[in-house]
Amino acid sequence: MRYKLVLSYLGHKFNGWTQGEIKSDTVCAVLEKALKQIGKQDIQLHGSSRTDIGVHAIKTTAHFDFQRRHRITNELQEDYEPEQMKRMINSLKSSDYVKVLEVHQVPATYNARRDAVERYYMYRILQVHSKEDAAYRHPLLMDRVWFLDTREGQKRLDVAKMREILPHLTSGRMDLSSLCRRAERLKRYHGDEHVVRRINSIEVEELECNSNPEITCSEWNKEIRIHVKAPSFIHNQVRILAGLLMAVGRGDLLPSSIPDLIADKKRHSKVMTAPASGLYLMNVKEKSDLT
Image 1: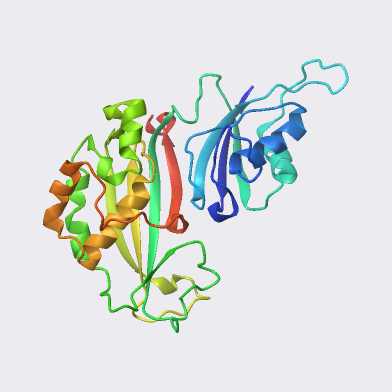
Image 2: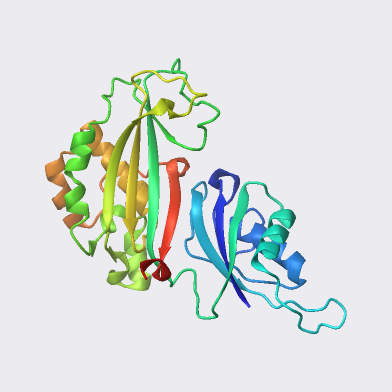
């Protein structure tokens, strides 16, 4: 029987998703260990997305195959009901920072990665003006946002300029080497087409940071949320995209320079890779969601 999991996790408590490597502190390893306790055999979990160290997931998916057998005779038994499987995994997993939200029995043809048609990521930036800001490194925000320090005379991010470059990034399939870590290495091993991707949509949202009542913020502490949707992503793409938008918002890069930057197919020295702490995998849309 093939099962589909819908799960959520707090990324800074794990060493990434990291499927297939022998590491006990990955999301995949924690769940596979619980499944082994249930099935008394090694069970491989296949995720729809492989997040980096520190990246959070609000809602993502995975699948695995499971045959329930009698502990003594090894004879096949009736499959576990989805709710029963969910309770067992959540009770046996070794970390409270990952939770299985839903379990479904699915056809043998279902594949969490291949059936995914769109992945939705959100990146959070919180602008802080000084160490005296109540929001600065607030414990409820630690490892959950990028604290963008503006104490060094930097201006607040210009959201209008950030939005100005979005059409250049969503104009169809394009070579995104400039938004990729180790693009040349990837092209050498997988071919030039590996870095040609399409971004379905990007939105830049500006919010008051005190939407959480426990946190008192100053007028300076605006939160920027970057929403990105695409069929698939290359390594560090959203984090580098966040760095690009930050550079434009600060005035380090002009909006008019972005077409040439993309066409150059190289990382720009003024575009940093934003910290993993601000990145969230929000949802994975599947083929079945389109019917």
